[in-house]
Image (cartoon, rainbow, N blue to C red; front, side, top):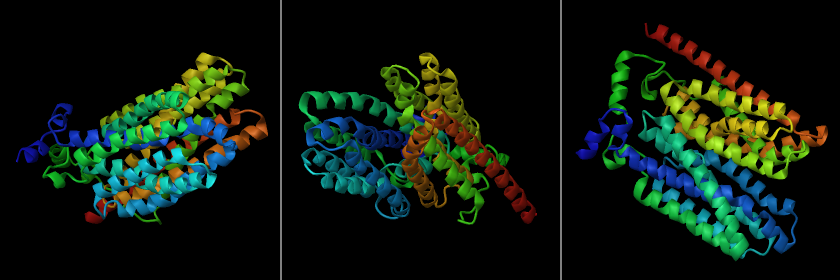
Length: 435
């Protein structure tokens, strides 16, 4: 009964401290931290050590990451259907365990084909672990503070990555990359297993609880304020592949991913314009630090206003950051300031797409709908590095690449605005039918 009562509380942050949703949120942070922060974001620290020892080219070694990304992209729509239908925690444990073990076993690899097979295995596991589970859990548990929960989980993963990468680099230098790979894999399990075993539950009903903010949602529904009412009470589009809004949101998500891959080009841009290589490396860190802060801020902005404001703000930050990087030229301070602002657009990749799917299509069939959007995230992420490198080869610099990002973010804002207008028009038409 205690759990039931806690679910009936309001939606203040103080109430969250006494709600079982807090425990689930901790689990979301730990799972994201293990999968994204430890495993996903540490791939780059092994490249030089592995290729130097084995005598491979960077291109041949990096092909395994391309295979991983492509397999994950194909797996995402499948995972979106399977995850809600079968034992959820068992799936997370199985795929989390396989991913961690595969990551660690790579320390024994001596042939390229072994890395390529590992890329396939990790790609399947990432499809079930990376993009879909956390938004699915958060949508079920948080009627209110949904954006904050998503932003906090994503920010925690970035924070873990900020520590794991330098620690992993030290392990490689002192113990060797093979031993480091095993240690980091064990660290990932230390995040994933407790998260799934002790904290995560897919639905509040699994523990006899109610979603956080449910009672406040009922109060809001009485006001019939469709702009600020909770998701469960607002008008939503029924999902259809013929609905242009779905494709607008799909494309917006892909453009967030395409723009975010510009992160990888920051050091090359700095070198091309005559900045010290260390400044280029710090630029990547500046984007990551901006991303951590803006993930939280965008989540809070979503909760205080609405998803449309948060989406436009993220796109605006990304565009302003890219513009400042271009205008700064070889001024290091201006370049780094632009990178921090660009982190707002980078943060949107994780926070905004799941929120927009929820805003326009609600929670009914959310996992399946969002899995289609994540397909765009994976596909556009694979295109980005090739696209920006091609621009650099053609022009001799990355100015046009940054300008492309400005255009992409502007298009995101336009797509969201048009979708919002179409949603309001459809809502008015529905009200006329009811009368």
